Amino acid sequence: MNPPDTERLSWLCLTNVQGLGGAALRKLFSAFGLPAQVLAQPERALAQVIGTELARAVRQASQAGTGAFEPTLAWLAKPDCHLLTLADASYPALLLQTDDPPTLIFARGRLDLLSQPTLAMVGSRHATAQGLRDARAFAHALSDGGLTIVSGLALGIDTAAHEGALLGQAKTIAVLGTGIDQIYPARNASLFEKIASEGLLLSEYPLGAPPLTHHFPRRNRLISGLSRGCFVVEAALNSGSLITARYATEQGREVFALPGSIHSPLSRGCHALIKQGAKLVDRMEDVLSELGVWSALATTPTSSNTAKQNPIITPEDAALLAHLGYAPMDIDTLCLRTGHSAETLSAVLLQLELDGKVTMLPGGRVQRLS
Image (cartoon, one colour):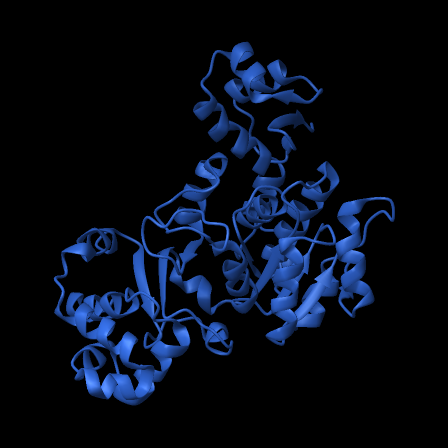
């Protein structure tokens, strides 16, 4: 639930002050209370807490107009769009236990997922075909086992994890490294909208924030902070996934890793984590038992699960699969064969991938599985 506009404006105004980070904000809240009370303080009182320069910036912000926040208020007026603050009852409890919880979180979708058991699932952007299949299968099974899967909407393992989780009952949360109104990467546009509809999108960045390089390591601390544990599927030794795993360790979360071939560079990060004490995973029960989560959904098929295992293939989908054949094919070639636009094919292929009929390969290629 969103706070009243006047309260939201106070939060937006204060958090928009340049140079005023989370630690300084928390000092101000401790000293004076909520943002409206902070903004009402004289500069001298503020300076005693955060120094003269920041105090002057806060006072200038309190006297500025609110026109700059009108686009944000308009976005918040849309259905299923929310602003969570540190004072909000809906703010994720697990994040409050971390050292640097974001002051504001923009959310779109199902806030109820924030109160469910969660598991981060991350891995390489340049995953192998087997890694993508493993991520999708584990995410599906763990979602049906009662864990909401948290990831970062990146290409590769993140994408497969979200797709697999959407097939399950507990769904998925995507934590963005951009403003929540920005779709990045563009190839995940259909997945972005599907998560907004069935799961939850989150971002600590203001609307319009672009995909800056330094956003993503900070985003990773939220992926682990929102979760009871962090499961790394494929990762090189110097990868962002290991940053997420390190955050998870620092936050007191369980770390899990999927082993792979000793000859694969994308297995070395997982093997390093296992050597450092991460739990080796080769079946979903390894995760569920460690986290103390188990749902009857994991062992009792429902009619909806049965339907997903045996999806109905429309004549149009069958024709697309026939054009595709069984060899890997790039999207441009498939567009020429079918006469469809890349945008149309993207939506159809996403559903076929969720149904287990095709898989996306590195380099923007697609391959039929059945």
